[in-house]
Amino acid sequence: MIGSLLYNIKQAFVQIFRNRGMSAASIFSILAMLLILGLVFIIIVNINLFSEIVKQDYDQVEVFIKDDATQEQIDEVINRLKTKKGVTDVVYRSQDEALQIMKERWGESGYLLDSLGENPLPASILINVESLDDASRIASAAGKFDIIEDVQYYKDTVDKLTKITNFLQIACIIIMAFLVVVSIVVVSNTIKLTVMARADEIHIMRYVGANNWFIRGPFIVEGIVIGLVASLLASAAICLIYQRLVAAVGDQIFAIVSSPLISVQYMTVNLTIIFVALGCSIGAWGSIVSMRRYLKA
Image (cartoon, rainbow, N blue to C red; front, side):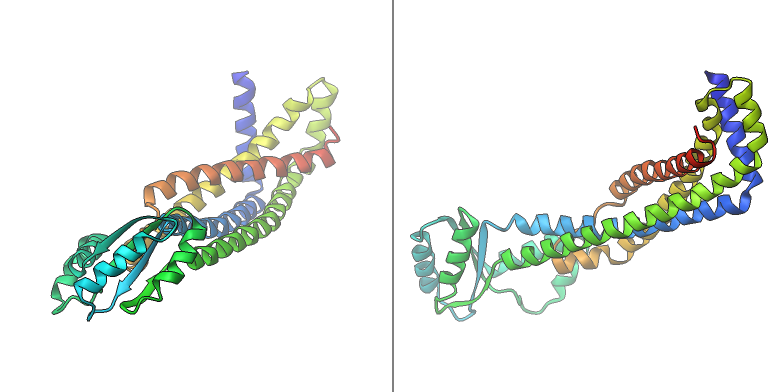
């Protein structure tokens, strides 16, 4: 068993170096496909994260109060909102509390807000509701009070993000299917050259009783090695790009949308697993397609 495995690995590397040009073409073909997949994966995962964070506010409507509103007017609005059907809780947030929350969201960059001469954030009322239908109705009703300057409600934003995410996922699947087919064809052609070069040797092996899997072994291992090399290169490239991206714009994105980017460690581990599985599968399938034609086994 071990001897057969070592034979397959040895023959696979011999075949790869014998057809260096086509092997390199196969590696770069799979590499290009995985790089595109990785970039789309990064976009989709981060949009999904932002969407999930926003969805946490689905059951909450925030109404911003005009600066000239009196405390009596604010208390009256709060009491009237508490009587609305579907409202579970109403909480007042002062300007100072809003500024403190903003500082916490900015993290290490929160000190920049200390340079503000005057607190620009308005006071607000947070309305917790039972369901999305209640949120839509209550958001509309809350906006009719005279002291309310604006109503923040995330449903439309999340709906748009969901549509964007679904579109990206469909586009990714279409692009992936096309690139996978191209990669399999390129790998198949690489293996095909090896099969043709060893045709006489393969015929002899069959005559002396070698079984099909013994003959297939080196070619499958060759495809897997090609896919593995491409996947590791793609993982390293994508993770390096993402690490630079997070370092460059991570804090700014967090400050703008109050949502962090997916951590580099999480992205590295998951992309590497996905890439290795996909790359090795493409390499193996390319070998199988080629052998079915030329070995007729």
